[in-house]
Image 1 (cartoon, rainbow, N blue to C red):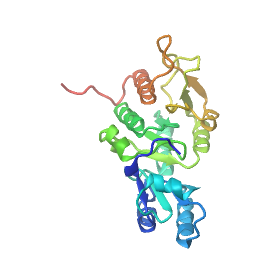
Image 2 (tube, rainbow, N blue to C red):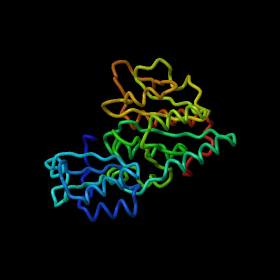
Image 3 (cartoon, one colour):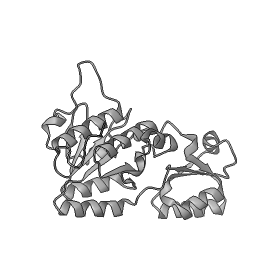
Image 4 (cartoon, rainbow, N blue to C red):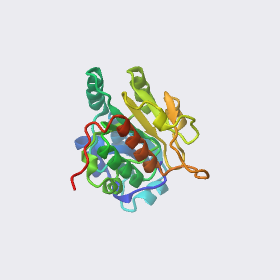
Length: 261
């Protein structure tokens, strides 16, 4: 679980969670059930969530009580601030654009734990022409209300999706001709020396863990951003913004224009 829990992103109770799964399933990124509970209604919610590709966990009642102090009836749903797009639909559109000669740009914020960093990353992505943001199915924060606030309204300007199997999706994109490049402070190739003009998936690591191993194995290359001696790393959202600016610069800021004074 992410270390930082935004209480406003948590919904508890059988009826409330059932309504979410029925009406807006892509708003739910994780379902947490009380371990050992025998209520058949919980089993039905688990089955519905699994059918939708939503991560399901079973944890002790004390943990659910900590996250949701009200009556939760043994179930919590961790929700996005809005319903996300279906990755299959967005992927098909991007592959069609690639086949038509364009160079789609996808961002993967891997292991981001702070929703405010995710929101800031979304804001930069929207400003710098990103075509889609693909969130890992687990191990990363979601678009919580705090994240949406940091995005300052830009979360509606770029498609945001969640992948139930991020390694599989990245491997498929690589096989389709996308470069899958990760930002890595230990890399030896500077971003401004790499060709970022083709179809590209840019993977940014989280605040504490960097890029998780199962995602790192899918990379086709690694990039480093210049830093002064003695500095360990950039903030996660800052590193993403800098690399996106370099990508936009290499693409001659196509589709972007300065804001009028």
